[in-house]
Image 1: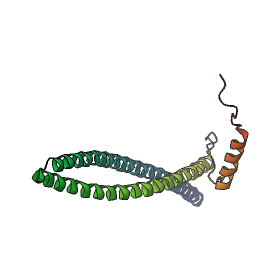
Image 2: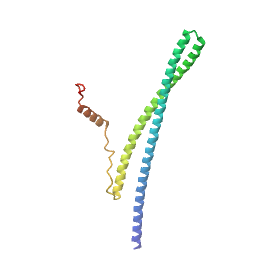
Image 3: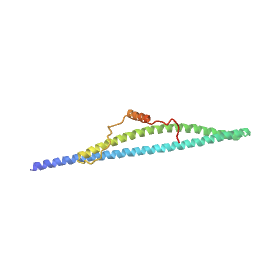
Image 4: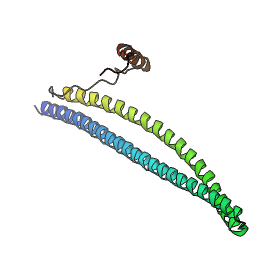
Amino acid sequence: MSIMTRFVRLWKADVHGVMDQMEDRQLLLRQNLREMEEELERQAALFGRMSAARDRARQEGEKNAKESARLTRDIDTAVQKDKEEIARQLIRKRLLLDKHLVELQRHLEEMDKKIVTLTEHLAERQRQYEEIRLRSACYLREQAIEAGQHDVPFPLRPDLGVTDEEVELELLKRKDSVVPNQGGPTS
């Protein structure tokens, strides 16, 4: 009888070990998903900060362009009234401002490139996260069913992916089904 008791205890320990491993995997999976989501949120916040900085730089550029135009008018006025010293100071100031505008424009172009790259990167990461999240939901559902829980909601399956061609075909069908009003607006 003691051998049978030992066998039952070993079997129970084995079952408990398997269950612990399954729970650990589920916890790790959920934790990794949370970390991925947090990283996506950080990247989105970075995108927001970069966009705001670009907008501020554009506003500064517009303000400086107006100032440059004003200085040009003032230079013309000083030259017409034979105020060469004033004209020189204004020319110096406008040339400095124009150099700043060129540098600002270069900076804006770099920012635009970085924002485009970040946008593409963020979209790709978001797509990957959604795919992993769906696969995880399927895995967790399967694990719950194996553990005896049968009232687990059914997640979308990620392996039922949609190709770009399918999307394009659906878009074309939708465009064809919408008949434009060629007779003009009716009242």
